[in-house]
Length: 202
Ligand code: GRF
Image (cartoon, rainbow, N blue to C red):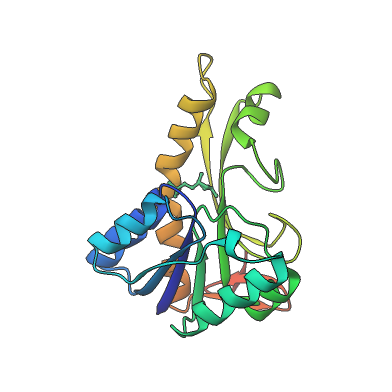
């Protein structure tokens, strides 16, 4: 399955996908694109001999023009799936609809809980005993698309934001490649906006 991965930062989820692809995940990472020059994800791509492209959002006057340029760049690589891996930008409806049902995100909470930012802090403040991460399809609603796969992690009594985030991130590295595998193997289908895995509604 040809994919393009979008990053803004460290790219540890990108690394998990690169590593899985080097094993037996049936994807071809055609490009990694970042909106930030300092994203370490670009370095990870270069090390894996994957085209690493910078498209700096500060070079564009508005969100619409940036997203149009981003779509053009992505489409140069004809991906079947676009994977957001810590891409820290809100996407325009035009962009989201262009990649309808082939745009994937990972979010560090048990959606529909804690859409948006600071999810670990919010889970701690709420006193949640369990936290986690979700892989979902991207729709126009921020962090609101149908969930494909979630992982739950315990919140420990002495956790702070960084220990909890680290525990969640380790699990993200397992579920993101797995969800991508389901898509690459044709096991995950979208039927009228409802997700099916092996023909069973999720
Ligand atoms: C992860 O926590 C992911 O859930 C969120 O952004 C973070 C990206 O981390 N969307 P990394 O760049 O993959 O290390």
